[in-house]
Length: 236
Image 1 (tube, rainbow, N blue to C red):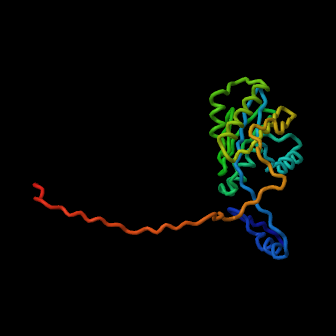
Image 2: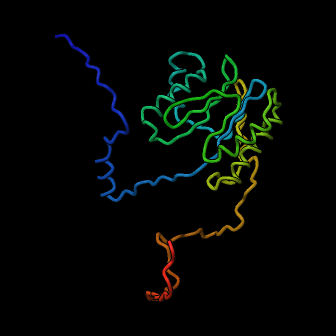
Image 3: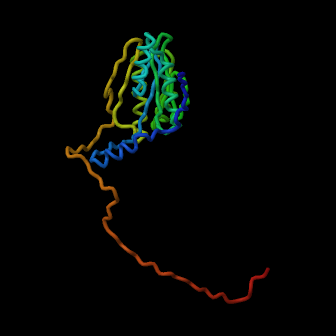
């Protein structure tokens, strides 16, 4: 008996196959995890055959690892770019992830931006996130080719600080990742330009509705003024 393979077209949008399972687990007492939506400022720039990044993502790291095992060679930056853009495009922007991707491979340093719908740019410096406009203003004013490592770190930190002070969702610290060929260096909490002034050891709790402190009702009465006009009518 011959067997035939039927190609099933991929599903579009999000997959809801596990919704029934999740409802069953919630009914049994499992607390569903909540998501936290925050803002951020992500920047990257190329300096002397290497590059900086202020925020890293490992969305496709497992796929790249499998690709290296299968091919027996290091992955290229363009491979990671293709995987990321295909993933975001398949969800038509509903993942809401704006990424800055960079790395060094056998062809040299690369820096790309990936928008939530899957479109990409290739630039020597890039910014993304809610504080990207403020960070881009710093890059456009001070970036130059052939930056040294120290100059690049200083410029990246300044761009992130600009995003922090001009965007309420961009946190309070600067994290930098320096990537060179065959090596990466993380500089966690490189700067903390906007620390919390008041910190409570017990934490903070907020009600879900606005508390009414006092109520004052002022009755309004309709007031009509009638003015009587006497004398000759106005001439046309």
